[in-house]
Image 1 (cartoon, rainbow, N blue to C red):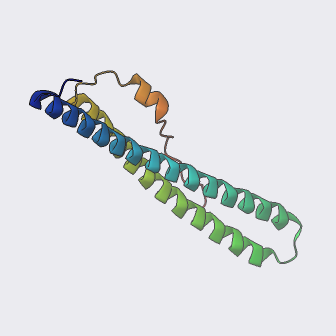
Image 2: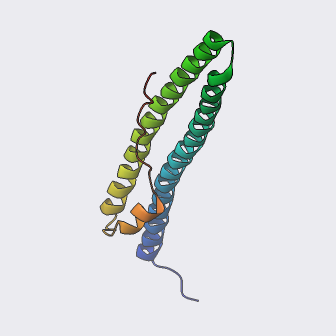
Length: 129
């Protein structure tokens, strides 16, 4: 077996470093998208809870108490939506860093990245909050 030349060793180290950088950048995007998905699930669960409160509002005698509870739930959901939208911005920035890193390394085709790292759109605030 022939020993590697200094240039071959250097090239191999450079390629390994590129792989590590791309891996870290991709993991950063994946973590941001996972946080978005978790937050979306929490928002949906809270929204469903608020809808069940609205249904109970129709037939309850303690109308004022339930109304206050619903208003608080709506306010809380809108706070979560605001946080979700900030996470969207964070995920978009991480995705941008990934694309810039890939392009700096000479990888020009990005359409597979768009498919792999799907960042959901921002959410609108619920009315009445």
